Length: 609
Image (tube, rainbow, N blue to C red; front, side):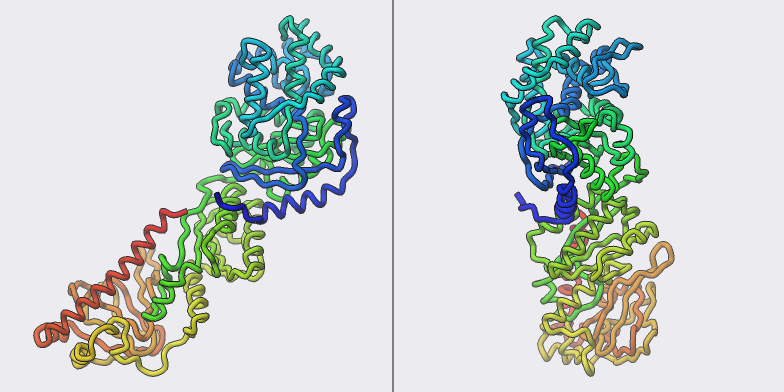
């Protein structure tokens, strides 16, 4: 398993933790004596993604789950008994009364909702089990499945709750009088007390919330804890009732379905993206964690996580990733340069993104880059196909690029074609090279690498003789002499079209000085560069072998001199010096084979992530 490398999310959580830890408002709950023993300085946070990555900050001190258990036990009851049976006894409407009020919905005769004590006690009695002991096993097992590990009960807290729980007993007897509980009221209240005494950490709450965000599938264990159709009902009630009398303002400020508890825990879920867990025992007058509320608000605001924030979420993700030893730029290189890129091109890494970028897709990108075990000196992030960059993606990309630059990695950003996405990335980290074309970015990185190996980005001085041409490099002097005797020399001023695509094949060209560009016309009518061919390289090999019309247009980028072997000269070579012709043909085949290998690697890279 890859080692988690600290990145922008870790830094974000650490920043939030440092700033919020200074807040000392609120009081520790004292109506349950054991809860009064909590250290008021305790403060821990966890953030879990839907593929099982968990980020933490602060102290992961064990504490009893208390009312944060309510939505998860509600989910178990819905899974075990079905929506109709649960709704017959527990409603879904928020109430302005305190969480421990002794009341029912007078219009329906039901407990108001499962997030207040009255509804939660009834909900606990509805989970599957032939006895209260069986139900307790189901509850503890279910909470453990949500957390992805075995959880236990704090017996001291249970005893403390039991000794001081007269109000909850009064609530239960009132529920019994309304026909919502069975006769063994004390046993049912004890079941609820034990449920509240299950021990968790902020990390556990993050994973539990992420399980709801993931359609009931635990992102760490991949277990389907509750059916998918249960999750929407649970998240709905969390949204409207989970934060007691603060639910409305919480939704306004934070915008995440959440549940708090009097031990200082808060669990919040953003459907389809993440789970958040916070623990700090200092409570406000409503019974919510003071630091937990502030921390969640800051994280949500920084990452733009509000549930109701308008967002297009089509095709987010990574399109492909590859390295320069497999996929090369279209810039023509000499044999010696190609050998260096073959050997060291893995130091240049490219990742292409596509579609809308939000927290989930960008967090995965951050992790893949930071945990990449292959040494990387140049990193290219290709955003051409990105259609939207939301607040979270912008923050994470900015942090990632800044971290790479600070670590000595040369970074290039290929900007999005979509104007709104391009505007969003315009202000990203300084020290980053920017391109509108991925091929130009690759060429830049290759030139940087070659420069470090002594290859200056300049044309050779003087004329490259035929014997030093890449195509003919391995041929004997006699063979090269036979070829040279049959070539003619042509001079092309800068901007001259050497030949158009579709033109009749007129020969094999060896570039002696200058450089040319090969391009084709796309379906839209625009021209796309295929390669740049510099002195020492050849073009037109295929046409001289098969005699077919030209498939590309070749233009001189500057004054260029070419040695040309015409089709007639090639035929003469075949008739008069067949051994030399055979060796030339074999050299052409090797060259075309090498190009095919690079093209195959380029196609294969589309399958990588």
